[in-house]
Image 1 (cartoon, one colour):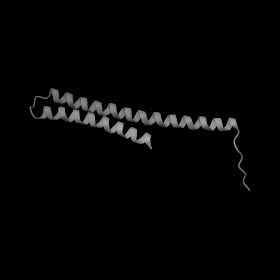
Image 2 (cartoon, rainbow, N blue to C red):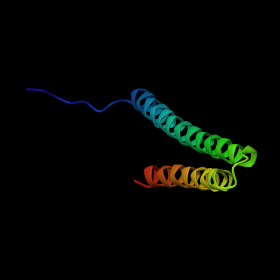
Image 3 (cartoon, rainbow, N blue to C red):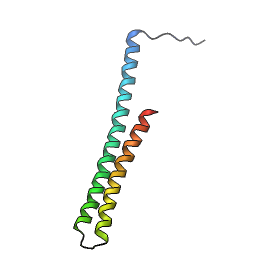
Image 4 (cartoon, rainbow, N blue to C red):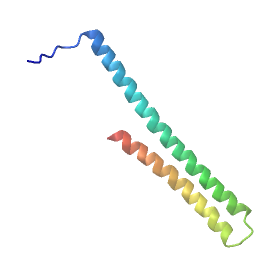
Length: 89
């Protein structure tokens, strides 16, 4: 027969401390992923906007500029949306 004993206060405190550390690691890892996603989409957007500003073609320049603006903003929005979605569940 298997008997289960209740953990004493020190064992329970150590268990709670380990769980808290794991939760903090998970939150930090997720947050850093989404911050890097925001920075990456911002960098892509800025690069495309810069290419559009330096383009001499009257059709390609504005297209690159607006594409960079759109991709940068949408990438930031999607990263923040995924962050809030992952923390609410």
